[in-house]
Image (cartoon, rainbow, N blue to C red; front, side, top):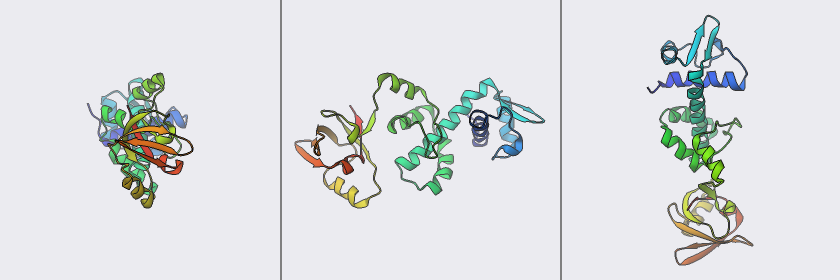
Amino acid sequence: MKLSDEAEELLEQLWINTYELNQALSSFKDLKTGRDEAGLKELQEEEYISVSEDGMALKKAGMKEAENAVRRHRLAERLMVDVLDIKKSLMEETACRFEHLLHKEVEESICTLLGHPTLCPHGKPIPQGRCCRESARTAKSVVSSITDMKKGTKGKIAYLHTRDNKKLQKLMAMGILPGISIDVRQKFPSYVLKIGHSQIAMDEEMAKDVYVRLK
């Protein structure tokens, strides 16, 4: 059963209070979302929380669900800032809406795209998912900046991450576009990439803004 947005937000707050603020029991006034009766009822019916006159606490069944809700929210924040370049003043509201749309498969794809980040833009830890643990075992990032790639590595350009419009236009004019296959031929003194039958060179400042999905 998919929880409502209100119920998920309550779970997030409870997880933060429990694991980051060390509050075993959360009083209703501590929760930013307030005492949402519908959300509380949902969580009680799923046996995710226990409620008393003093407040509420996560039950064992609700701990993982709450952790997943926090993970989705913080991954959404990273996506907003790192890829979509949304201003931090708008990030929180946008991330709150976006997180509720994420399914497990999409969540893992976004985490992989971002290189399995460990911290959200606020510096708070992002709970690990299955894809993070599998990545740690294989020791390989699926999406990487050109500056982190080894000589001889091949891949397809995933996205360009720069706020400098002139730099973006220059990269595009060089043929650096999402979906284009590249081969890193040289890293020093400049970066040399093979694209099709051509080779292009760029400095580190430009190379660091080009992210590649590795083959």
